[in-house]
Length: 500
Image (cartoon, rainbow, N blue to C red; front, side):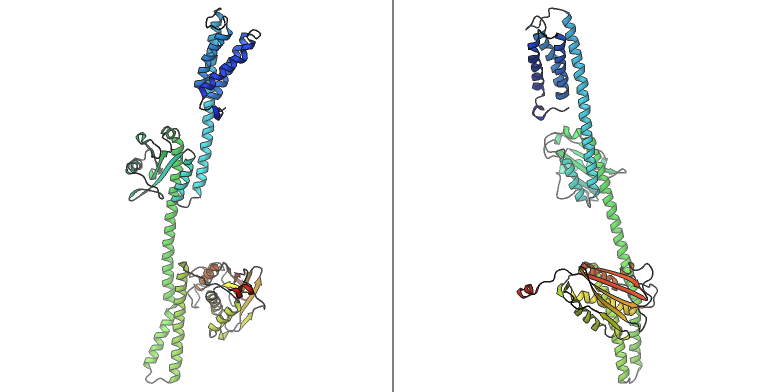
Protein backbone atom coordinates (compact mmCIF):
# COMPACT_ATOMS: atom_id res chain seq x y z
CA UNK A 1 0.00 0.00 0.00
CA UNK A 2 1.40 3.38 -0.98
CA UNK A 3 1.40 6.54 1.11
CA UNK A 4 -0.86 9.36 -0.12
CA UNK A 5 1.00 11.93 -2.18
CA UNK A 6 0.49 14.67 0.44
CA UNK A 7 2.52 12.71 3.05
CA UNK A 8 5.04 11.02 0.75
CA UNK A 9 7.81 13.54 1.54
CA UNK A 10 6.99 13.75 5.29
CA UNK A 11 7.19 10.12 6.33
CA UNK A 12 8.94 10.56 9.68
CA UNK A 13 6.66 13.36 10.93
CA UNK A 14 3.72 11.22 9.82
CA UNK A 15 5.01 8.29 11.90
CA UNK A 16 5.37 10.55 14.96
CA UNK A 17 1.89 11.92 14.42
CA UNK A 18 0.46 8.40 14.15
CA UNK A 19 2.06 7.30 17.46
CA UNK A 20 0.94 10.45 19.27
CA UNK A 21 -2.59 10.02 17.92
CA UNK A 22 -2.63 6.43 19.20
CA UNK A 23 -1.55 7.66 22.63
CA UNK A 24 -4.22 10.36 22.71
CA UNK A 25 -6.94 7.90 21.68
CA UNK A 26 -5.91 5.32 24.33
CA UNK A 27 -5.21 7.77 27.17
CA UNK A 28 -8.86 8.28 28.24
CA UNK A 29 -9.25 4.49 28.57
CA UNK A 30 -6.06 3.98 30.61
CA UNK A 31 -7.90 3.00 33.79
CA UNK A 32 -10.72 1.02 32.18
CA UNK A 33 -8.91 -1.00 29.49
CA UNK A 34 -6.37 -3.70 30.13
CA UNK A 35 -2.82 -2.52 29.48
CA UNK A 36 -2.22 -5.44 27.08
CA UNK A 37 -4.93 -4.10 24.74
CA UNK A 38 -3.30 -0.67 24.78
CA UNK A 39 -0.06 -2.42 23.87
CA UNK A 40 -1.84 -3.90 20.83
CA UNK A 41 -2.94 -0.43 19.76
CA UNK A 42 0.66 0.74 19.64
CA UNK A 43 1.65 -2.39 17.67
CA UNK A 44 -1.14 -1.55 15.25
CA UNK A 45 0.37 1.94 14.81
CA UNK A 46 3.74 0.32 14.09
CA UNK A 47 2.11 -1.99 11.53
CA UNK A 48 0.39 0.93 9.78
CA UNK A 49 3.66 2.88 9.74
CA UNK A 50 5.45 -0.07 8.14
CA UNK A 51 2.78 -0.44 5.45
CA UNK A 52 2.34 3.22 4.60
CA UNK A 53 5.61 4.87 5.49
CA UNK A 54 8.35 2.28 5.00
CA UNK A 55 11.08 0.65 7.04
CA UNK A 56 12.79 3.72 8.58
CA UNK A 57 9.64 5.45 9.90
CA UNK A 58 8.35 2.08 11.18
CA UNK A 59 11.52 1.45 13.24
CA UNK A 60 11.25 4.94 14.68
CA UNK A 61 7.59 4.26 15.48
CA UNK A 62 8.60 1.13 17.42
CA UNK A 63 10.90 3.00 19.79
CA UNK A 64 8.51 5.94 20.09
CA UNK A 65 5.60 3.63 20.86
CA UNK A 66 7.57 1.86 23.64
CA UNK A 67 8.52 5.24 25.11
CA UNK A 68 4.95 6.59 24.99
CA UNK A 69 3.57 3.34 26.39
CA UNK A 70 6.05 3.46 29.30
CA UNK A 71 5.58 7.17 29.98
CA UNK A 72 1.78 7.35 29.89
CA UNK A 73 0.44 3.86 30.57
CA UNK A 74 2.90 2.06 32.89
CA UNK A 75 2.89 3.04 36.61
CA UNK A 76 4.23 5.34 37.80
CA UNK A 77 2.65 7.56 35.13
CA UNK A 78 4.47 10.45 33.45
CA UNK A 79 7.78 8.80 34.26
CA UNK A 80 10.09 6.37 32.55
CA UNK A 81 10.62 4.54 35.89
CA UNK A 82 9.10 1.05 36.12
CA UNK A 83 7.38 -0.04 39.33
CA UNK A 84 7.12 -3.69 38.36
CA UNK A 85 10.00 -5.50 36.66
CA UNK A 86 7.58 -7.61 34.62
CA UNK A 87 6.90 -4.57 32.48
CA UNK A 88 10.46 -4.80 31.23
CA UNK A 89 9.52 -8.10 29.61
CA UNK A 90 6.50 -6.35 28.07
CA UNK A 91 8.76 -3.62 26.69
CA UNK A 92 11.20 -6.18 25.27
CA UNK A 93 8.45 -8.24 23.64
CA UNK A 94 6.78 -5.10 22.31
CA UNK A 95 10.07 -3.85 20.88
CA UNK A 96 10.95 -7.22 19.31
CA UNK A 97 7.49 -7.78 17.81
CA UNK A 98 7.43 -4.21 16.55
CA UNK A 99 10.82 -4.50 14.88
CA UNK A 100 10.01 -7.88 13.29
CA UNK A 101 6.62 -6.64 12.14
CA UNK A 102 8.05 -3.45 10.65
CA UNK A 103 10.78 -5.42 8.87
CA UNK A 104 8.45 -8.04 7.38
CA UNK A 105 5.74 -5.58 6.37
CA UNK A 106 8.27 -3.15 4.90
CA UNK A 107 9.93 -5.98 2.98
CA UNK A 108 6.55 -7.07 1.62
CA UNK A 109 5.73 -3.48 0.63
CA UNK A 110 9.10 -3.12 -1.13
CA UNK A 111 8.59 -6.37 -3.02
CA UNK A 112 5.10 -5.29 -4.01
CA UNK A 113 6.41 -1.94 -5.22
CA UNK A 114 9.18 -3.67 -7.18
CA UNK A 115 6.63 -6.00 -8.79
CA UNK A 116 4.45 -3.06 -9.75
CA UNK A 117 7.47 -1.23 -11.17
CA UNK A 118 8.51 -4.35 -13.08
CA UNK A 119 5.00 -4.69 -14.51
CA UNK A 120 5.02 -1.07 -15.64
CA UNK A 121 8.43 -1.49 -17.25
CA UNK A 122 7.34 -4.69 -19.01
CA UNK A 123 4.26 -2.94 -20.35
CA UNK A 124 6.35 -0.01 -21.56
CA UNK A 125 8.83 -2.39 -23.24
CA UNK A 126 5.97 -4.15 -24.97
CA UNK A 127 4.64 -0.79 -26.19
CA UNK A 128 8.16 0.13 -27.37
CA UNK A 129 8.43 -3.09 -29.37
CA UNK A 130 5.00 -2.48 -30.92
CA UNK A 131 5.88 1.08 -31.92
CA UNK A 132 9.29 0.07 -33.27
CA UNK A 133 7.64 -2.62 -35.38
CA UNK A 134 5.97 0.01 -37.58
CA UNK A 135 9.03 2.29 -37.92
CA UNK A 136 9.95 2.92 -41.55
CA UNK A 137 13.39 4.44 -41.06
CA UNK A 138 16.06 5.10 -38.44
CA UNK A 139 14.78 8.65 -37.84
CA UNK A 140 11.45 7.24 -36.71
CA UNK A 141 13.30 4.77 -34.47
CA UNK A 142 15.08 7.69 -32.78
CA UNK A 143 11.78 9.51 -32.23
CA UNK A 144 10.16 6.40 -30.73
CA UNK A 145 13.14 5.80 -28.43
CA UNK A 146 13.00 9.41 -27.21
CA UNK A 147 9.27 9.10 -26.48
CA UNK A 148 9.88 5.87 -24.56
CA UNK A 149 12.61 7.34 -22.34
CA UNK A 150 10.52 10.46 -21.84
CA UNK A 151 8.33 8.33 -19.52
CA UNK A 152 11.33 8.12 -17.14
CA UNK A 153 12.37 11.78 -17.52
CA UNK A 154 15.44 10.80 -19.52
CA UNK A 155 16.91 12.26 -22.70
CA UNK A 156 18.48 10.13 -25.40
CA UNK A 157 20.37 10.45 -28.67
CA UNK A 158 20.59 7.56 -31.13
CA UNK A 159 23.91 7.17 -32.93
CA UNK A 160 24.32 4.72 -35.81
CA UNK A 161 27.57 3.16 -36.96
CA UNK A 162 28.89 4.10 -40.38
CA UNK A 163 32.17 4.02 -42.27
CA UNK A 164 33.00 7.51 -41.01
CA UNK A 165 32.19 6.63 -37.38
CA UNK A 166 29.16 7.22 -35.20
CA UNK A 167 26.60 9.62 -36.62
CA UNK A 168 23.68 11.07 -34.61
CA UNK A 169 20.24 10.38 -36.04
CA UNK A 170 18.22 13.42 -37.05
CA UNK A 171 19.16 16.98 -36.14
CA UNK A 172 20.70 16.06 -32.78
CA UNK A 173 24.40 16.29 -31.93
CA UNK A 174 26.81 15.38 -29.13
CA UNK A 175 29.76 17.33 -27.72
CA UNK A 176 33.19 16.01 -28.63
CA UNK A 177 33.82 14.51 -25.19
CA UNK A 178 30.52 12.61 -25.12
CA UNK A 179 31.05 11.47 -28.70
CA UNK A 180 34.36 9.98 -27.59
CA UNK A 181 32.66 8.03 -24.80
CA UNK A 182 30.02 6.80 -27.28
CA UNK A 183 32.75 5.67 -29.69
CA UNK A 184 34.50 3.85 -26.85
CA UNK A 185 31.25 2.03 -25.95
CA UNK A 186 30.86 1.07 -29.60
CA UNK A 187 34.44 -0.18 -29.95
CA UNK A 188 34.41 -2.16 -26.71
CA UNK A 189 30.77 -3.34 -27.01
CA UNK A 190 30.26 -2.46 -23.35
CA UNK A 191 28.10 -0.06 -21.36
CA UNK A 192 29.96 3.07 -20.24
CA UNK A 193 28.70 5.29 -17.41
CA UNK A 194 30.36 8.62 -16.69
CA UNK A 195 29.37 10.03 -13.30
CA UNK A 196 31.64 13.04 -13.72
CA UNK A 197 29.33 14.33 -16.45
CA UNK A 198 26.21 13.90 -14.30
CA UNK A 199 24.00 16.90 -14.80
CA UNK A 200 20.84 18.03 -16.50
CA UNK A 201 21.09 17.68 -20.25
CA UNK A 202 24.35 15.72 -20.21
CA UNK A 203 24.66 12.17 -21.56
CA UNK A 204 26.15 9.99 -18.85
CA UNK A 205 25.32 6.44 -20.02
CA UNK A 206 26.29 4.98 -23.39
CA UNK A 207 24.70 1.63 -24.28
CA UNK A 208 25.93 -0.25 -27.39
CA UNK A 209 23.23 -1.58 -29.71
CA UNK A 210 24.65 -4.98 -30.62
CA UNK A 211 23.22 -7.81 -32.71
CA UNK A 212 25.19 -11.07 -32.88
CA UNK A 213 28.33 -9.40 -31.50
CA UNK A 214 28.09 -6.72 -34.17
CA UNK A 215 27.57 -3.19 -32.87
CA UNK A 216 25.12 -1.16 -34.97
CA UNK A 217 25.26 2.02 -32.92
CA UNK A 218 25.07 3.53 -29.46
CA UNK A 219 22.17 4.80 -27.36
CA UNK A 220 23.35 7.82 -25.36
CA UNK A 221 21.17 8.53 -22.29
CA UNK A 222 21.17 11.37 -19.78
CA UNK A 223 18.87 12.63 -17.00
CA UNK A 224 16.78 15.75 -17.29
CA UNK A 225 17.56 16.52 -13.65
CA UNK A 226 20.98 16.00 -12.00
CA UNK A 227 20.30 12.41 -10.92
CA UNK A 228 22.70 9.69 -12.05
CA UNK A 229 21.18 7.13 -9.66
CA UNK A 230 17.97 6.99 -11.66
CA UNK A 231 19.83 5.62 -14.68
CA UNK A 232 21.54 2.95 -12.54
CA UNK A 233 18.15 1.82 -11.21
CA UNK A 234 16.79 1.52 -14.73
CA UNK A 235 19.89 -0.05 -16.29
CA UNK A 236 18.28 -3.50 -16.97
CA UNK A 237 15.33 -1.76 -18.60
CA UNK A 238 17.59 0.49 -20.67
CA UNK A 239 19.69 -2.46 -21.85
CA UNK A 240 16.54 -4.32 -22.90
CA UNK A 241 15.34 -1.23 -24.79
CA UNK A 242 18.74 -0.89 -26.50
CA UNK A 243 18.53 -4.54 -27.58
CA UNK A 244 15.05 -4.00 -29.10
CA UNK A 245 16.21 -0.87 -30.90
CA UNK A 246 19.25 -2.76 -32.25
CA UNK A 247 17.00 -5.47 -33.70
CA UNK A 248 14.84 -2.89 -35.48
CA UNK A 249 17.87 -1.01 -36.82
CA UNK A 250 19.25 -4.32 -38.13
CA UNK A 251 15.91 -5.15 -39.74
CA UNK A 252 15.71 -1.72 -41.41
CA UNK A 253 19.28 -2.09 -42.70
CA UNK A 254 18.48 -5.51 -44.16
CA UNK A 255 15.25 -4.23 -45.70
CA UNK A 256 17.13 -1.31 -47.24
CA UNK A 257 19.76 -3.66 -48.66
CA UNK A 258 17.07 -5.92 -50.11
CA UNK A 259 15.28 -2.93 -51.59
CA UNK A 260 18.46 -1.66 -53.22
CA UNK A 261 19.19 -5.13 -54.55
CA UNK A 262 15.70 -5.38 -56.01
CA UNK A 263 16.05 -1.95 -57.61
CA UNK A 264 19.34 -2.93 -59.17
CA UNK A 265 17.83 -6.20 -60.42
CA UNK A 266 14.82 -4.35 -61.84
CA UNK A 267 17.06 -1.79 -63.52
CA UNK A 268 19.16 -4.57 -65.06
CA UNK A 269 16.06 -6.44 -66.14
CA UNK A 270 14.59 -3.26 -67.64
CA UNK A 271 17.83 -2.53 -69.47
CA UNK A 272 17.97 -6.05 -70.86
CA UNK A 273 14.30 -5.92 -71.89
CA UNK A 274 14.75 -2.58 -73.64
CA UNK A 275 17.77 -3.85 -75.55
CA UNK A 276 15.93 -7.04 -76.49
CA UNK A 277 12.87 -5.09 -77.60
CA UNK A 278 14.88 -2.64 -79.64
CA UNK A 279 16.97 -5.35 -81.28
CA UNK A 280 13.91 -7.46 -82.10
CA UNK A 281 11.31 -4.89 -83.14
CA UNK A 282 13.50 -2.35 -84.87
CA UNK A 283 15.40 -4.92 -86.92
CA UNK A 284 12.43 -5.43 -89.26
CA UNK A 285 11.82 -1.76 -90.20
CA UNK A 286 15.55 -1.11 -90.47
CA UNK A 287 16.00 -4.10 -92.78
CA UNK A 288 13.08 -2.89 -94.90
CA UNK A 289 14.50 0.61 -95.09
CA UNK A 290 17.90 -0.71 -96.19
CA UNK A 291 16.29 -3.00 -98.78
CA UNK A 292 14.10 -0.24 -100.18
CA UNK A 293 17.07 2.11 -100.40
CA UNK A 294 19.06 -0.56 -102.27
CA UNK A 295 16.15 -1.06 -104.67
CA UNK A 296 16.05 2.62 -105.48
CA UNK A 297 19.84 2.75 -105.86
CA UNK A 298 19.90 -0.19 -108.28
CA UNK A 299 17.18 1.31 -110.47
CA UNK A 300 18.92 3.33 -113.21
CA UNK A 301 15.80 5.27 -114.10
CA UNK A 302 12.96 4.21 -111.78
CA UNK A 303 9.46 5.09 -112.85
CA UNK A 304 7.35 7.51 -110.87
CA UNK A 305 5.08 4.72 -109.60
CA UNK A 306 8.03 2.72 -108.22
CA UNK A 307 9.42 5.82 -106.52
CA UNK A 308 6.03 6.60 -105.01
CA UNK A 309 5.44 3.07 -103.75
CA UNK A 310 8.97 2.80 -102.34
CA UNK A 311 8.73 6.20 -100.66
CA UNK A 312 5.39 5.22 -99.13
CA UNK A 313 6.89 2.02 -97.77
CA UNK A 314 9.87 3.93 -96.39
CA UNK A 315 7.50 6.36 -94.70
CA UNK A 316 5.46 3.53 -93.14
CA UNK A 317 8.54 1.79 -91.82
CA UNK A 318 9.93 5.07 -90.46
CA UNK A 319 6.60 5.74 -88.75
CA UNK A 320 6.74 2.25 -87.22
CA UNK A 321 10.20 2.97 -85.81
CA UNK A 322 8.96 6.35 -84.55
CA UNK A 323 6.02 4.66 -82.83
CA UNK A 324 8.30 2.15 -81.10
CA UNK A 325 10.66 4.87 -79.87
CA UNK A 326 7.73 7.07 -78.77
CA UNK A 327 6.32 4.24 -76.67
CA UNK A 328 9.70 3.59 -75.07
CA UNK A 329 10.19 7.27 -74.24
CA UNK A 330 6.62 7.56 -72.94
CA UNK A 331 7.08 4.57 -70.64
CA UNK A 332 10.40 5.94 -69.36
CA UNK A 333 8.68 9.25 -68.57
CA UNK A 334 5.79 7.55 -66.78
CA UNK A 335 8.15 5.36 -64.72
CA UNK A 336 10.06 8.49 -63.68
CA UNK A 337 6.77 9.87 -62.23
CA UNK A 338 7.02 12.73 -64.68
CA UNK A 339 3.37 12.54 -65.81
CA UNK A 340 1.61 15.89 -65.60
CA UNK A 341 -2.11 15.70 -66.24
CA UNK A 342 -3.84 18.50 -68.12
CA UNK A 343 -7.38 17.60 -67.08
CA UNK A 344 -10.46 19.26 -68.50
CA UNK A 345 -14.18 18.51 -68.41
CA UNK A 346 -14.95 17.21 -71.91
CA UNK A 347 -16.96 14.55 -73.77
CA UNK A 348 -15.33 11.18 -74.32
CA UNK A 349 -16.71 10.77 -77.86
CA UNK A 350 -14.51 13.57 -79.25
CA UNK A 351 -11.35 11.80 -78.07
CA UNK A 352 -12.63 8.51 -79.51
CA UNK A 353 -13.22 10.23 -82.86
CA UNK A 354 -9.72 11.73 -82.99
CA UNK A 355 -8.19 8.34 -82.10
CA UNK A 356 -10.07 6.63 -84.94
CA UNK A 357 -8.89 9.28 -87.41
CA UNK A 358 -5.27 8.71 -86.38
CA UNK A 359 -5.62 4.97 -87.07
CA UNK A 360 -7.66 5.25 -90.25
CA UNK A 361 -5.09 3.41 -92.39
CA UNK A 362 -4.54 0.64 -89.82
CA UNK A 363 -8.33 0.11 -89.52
CA UNK A 364 -8.78 -0.20 -93.27
CA UNK A 365 -8.82 -4.01 -93.10
CA UNK A 366 -11.36 -4.20 -90.25
CA UNK A 367 -14.87 -2.96 -89.73
CA UNK A 368 -15.12 -0.77 -86.62
CA UNK A 369 -18.32 -1.14 -84.61
CA UNK A 370 -18.84 1.80 -82.25
CA UNK A 371 -21.55 1.96 -79.61
CA UNK A 372 -21.79 5.24 -77.71
CA UNK A 373 -25.06 5.93 -75.89
CA UNK A 374 -26.47 9.44 -76.19
CA UNK A 375 -26.45 11.94 -73.33
CA UNK A 376 -23.12 10.96 -71.76
CA UNK A 377 -21.90 13.37 -69.05
CA UNK A 378 -18.66 15.30 -69.26
CA UNK A 379 -15.63 13.56 -67.77
CA UNK A 380 -12.53 15.19 -66.28
CA UNK A 381 -9.45 13.76 -68.06
CA UNK A 382 -6.34 14.59 -70.08
CA UNK A 383 -7.42 14.34 -73.71
CA UNK A 384 -3.91 13.68 -75.11
CA UNK A 385 -3.19 10.82 -72.70
CA UNK A 386 -6.63 9.19 -73.00
CA UNK A 387 -6.26 9.42 -76.79
CA UNK A 388 -2.98 7.52 -76.42
CA UNK A 389 -4.77 4.84 -74.37
CA UNK A 390 -7.53 4.39 -76.95
CA UNK A 391 -5.03 4.29 -79.81
CA UNK A 392 -2.92 1.66 -78.04
CA UNK A 393 -5.97 -0.49 -77.32
CA UNK A 394 -7.18 -0.25 -80.94
CA UNK A 395 -3.69 -1.05 -82.27
CA UNK A 396 -3.50 -4.13 -80.03
CA UNK A 397 -6.97 -5.21 -81.10
CA UNK A 398 -6.01 -4.88 -84.78
CA UNK A 399 -2.65 -6.60 -84.30
CA UNK A 400 -4.04 -9.72 -82.60
CA UNK A 401 -7.38 -10.07 -84.38
CA UNK A 402 -8.23 -12.46 -87.18
CA UNK A 403 -7.88 -10.67 -90.56
CA UNK A 404 -11.15 -9.22 -91.83
CA UNK A 405 -12.99 -9.52 -88.48
CA UNK A 406 -14.61 -6.45 -86.91
CA UNK A 407 -13.24 -4.43 -84.01
CA UNK A 408 -15.78 -3.31 -81.41
CA UNK A 409 -15.58 -0.18 -79.24
CA UNK A 410 -18.27 0.23 -76.56
CA UNK A 411 -18.89 3.06 -74.13
CA UNK A 412 -21.11 2.41 -71.11
CA UNK A 413 -22.25 4.62 -68.26
CA UNK A 414 -21.80 2.81 -64.94
CA UNK A 415 -22.57 4.05 -61.41
CA UNK A 416 -19.91 6.64 -60.55
CA UNK A 417 -17.75 5.83 -63.60
CA UNK A 418 -17.60 5.81 -67.39
CA UNK A 419 -16.35 2.62 -69.01
CA UNK A 420 -14.71 2.19 -72.44
CA UNK A 421 -14.17 -1.32 -73.84
CA UNK A 422 -12.24 -2.41 -76.97
CA UNK A 423 -12.80 -5.99 -78.14
CA UNK A 424 -11.63 -8.09 -81.09
CA UNK A 425 -12.04 -11.57 -82.49
CA UNK A 426 -9.05 -13.83 -82.28
CA UNK A 427 -7.21 -16.28 -80.05
CA UNK A 428 -7.52 -14.04 -76.97
CA UNK A 429 -5.06 -13.81 -74.10
CA UNK A 430 -3.21 -16.96 -73.00
CA UNK A 431 -4.73 -18.61 -69.94
CA UNK A 432 -3.68 -16.94 -66.69
CA UNK A 433 -2.04 -13.93 -68.35
CA UNK A 434 -4.86 -11.36 -68.11
CA UNK A 435 -3.19 -9.62 -65.15
CA UNK A 436 0.42 -9.89 -66.28
CA UNK A 437 -0.17 -8.35 -69.73
CA UNK A 438 -0.05 -4.92 -68.07
CA UNK A 439 3.52 -5.52 -66.86
CA UNK A 440 6.34 -3.86 -68.74
CA UNK A 441 7.67 -5.81 -71.75
CA UNK A 442 5.15 -8.61 -71.21
CA UNK A 443 3.29 -9.72 -74.33
CA UNK A 444 0.19 -11.85 -74.55
CA UNK A 445 2.04 -14.33 -76.78
CA UNK A 446 5.79 -14.22 -76.03
CA UNK A 447 6.72 -16.35 -79.02
CA UNK A 448 4.30 -14.70 -81.44
CA UNK A 449 5.58 -13.55 -84.82
CA UNK A 450 3.44 -10.42 -84.42
CA UNK A 451 5.60 -7.37 -83.84
CA UNK A 452 5.43 -5.39 -80.61
CA UNK A 453 7.49 -4.33 -77.61
CA UNK A 454 5.04 -5.26 -74.88
CA UNK A 455 4.80 -1.75 -73.41
CA UNK A 456 1.52 -0.50 -74.92
CA UNK A 457 -0.71 -1.92 -72.18
CA UNK A 458 1.80 -0.89 -69.49
CA UNK A 459 1.51 2.70 -70.75
CA UNK A 460 -2.28 2.41 -70.68
CA UNK A 461 -2.28 1.17 -67.11
CA UNK A 462 0.04 3.98 -65.94
CA UNK A 463 -2.15 6.64 -67.59
CA UNK A 464 -5.43 5.24 -66.25
CA UNK A 465 -3.94 4.90 -62.75
CA UNK A 466 -2.92 8.56 -62.96
CA UNK A 467 -6.60 9.37 -63.57
CA UNK A 468 -7.68 7.27 -60.53
CA UNK A 469 -9.34 4.82 -62.89
CA UNK A 470 -9.12 1.07 -63.50
CA UNK A 471 -8.16 -1.07 -66.48
CA UNK A 472 -8.66 -4.82 -66.91
CA UNK A 473 -8.08 -7.41 -69.62
CA UNK A 474 -10.30 -10.44 -70.13
CA UNK A 475 -11.11 -13.16 -72.60
CA UNK A 476 -14.53 -13.18 -74.21
CA UNK A 477 -16.14 -15.74 -76.55
CA UNK A 478 -14.10 -15.82 -79.77
CA UNK A 479 -11.72 -13.06 -78.72
CA UNK A 480 -10.35 -10.69 -76.10
CA UNK A 481 -11.43 -7.42 -74.51
CA UNK A 482 -9.65 -4.64 -72.63
CA UNK A 483 -11.81 -2.17 -70.74
CA UNK A 484 -10.93 0.91 -68.70
CA UNK A 485 -13.05 3.19 -66.54
CA UNK A 486 -12.74 6.81 -65.46
CA UNK A 487 -14.41 8.33 -62.38
CA UNK A 488 -17.35 10.58 -63.22
CA UNK A 489 -17.10 13.24 -60.54
CA UNK A 490 -19.34 16.33 -60.61
CA UNK A 491 -19.08 18.40 -63.81
CA UNK A 492 -19.33 22.19 -63.50
CA UNK A 493 -22.74 23.71 -64.17
CA UNK A 494 -23.41 26.11 -67.00
CA UNK A 495 -23.59 28.99 -64.53
CA UNK A 496 -20.11 28.20 -63.26
CA UNK A 497 -18.76 27.98 -66.80
CA UNK A 498 -20.30 31.35 -67.71
CA UNK A 499 -18.82 32.94 -64.58
CA UNK A 500 -15.38 31.54 -65.38
